[in-house]
Image 1 (cartoon, rainbow, N blue to C red):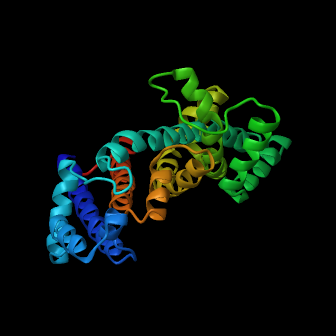
Image 2 (image 1 turned 45 degrees about the vertical axis):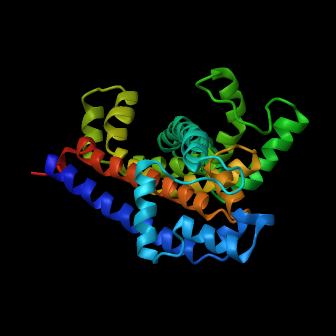
Length: 315
């Protein structure tokens, strides 16, 4: 098991290294001159050449990459050209917790509602419950998240006045205020995943409930709830966890749009503002943070497989 974990960690480090190279090269090829942005009204050819040398931008690209990678690993991410604040403070300490709060809230909401709805749909197959769950799943996967966000703002924020339509309150400082502000964004981001979980749980559970070991459990007189939730759900955990891990990238992409719609100061809005201001250092920090988050989450999922299914444990 230790060898298996070490192999997976090694593969993850290689992937992170490749992602860092690709993102660095692509952003270096992007249009715009960061030195000119920094100088603004103080621009002159002499000042441009001096600042370029000072920042090391006149050095070969491999040397610039090594210097940037060393700074990224040690937390020295440079300063924002616009706000002049350290990028590490802006991106990692301030923006990342907002995005993680939104993503965790959306994922939790999708699991808490989507799994029971999928089970209900599978157990009550071909009934009005099944038809209702199928209609919800179809609508949820087809509805664009940004349009749903605007619709929720109009109905629950503007028309009914039940929830705030923008802003973020840290739940670790004000738990009720944090939940209150996060309900509409989390609902917007989670609807697609909720619908996907309903369809996945229904399809897999119907197949499992027709297996002989389920019939044997029923023949032993075990309660229906135990048969479904213990014997049935245990056998669909693996595909459920796999799909959730693979869809994490989609979740982070949706978080960018959701943060923009609800004016949440997360990584998505940070990257959007940085692209508009041509602050490629900030964009690079955001891309690397989301990339690391996605890759490390998939590492955790890979390591959880042997725990969920003993047949996958290395011998």
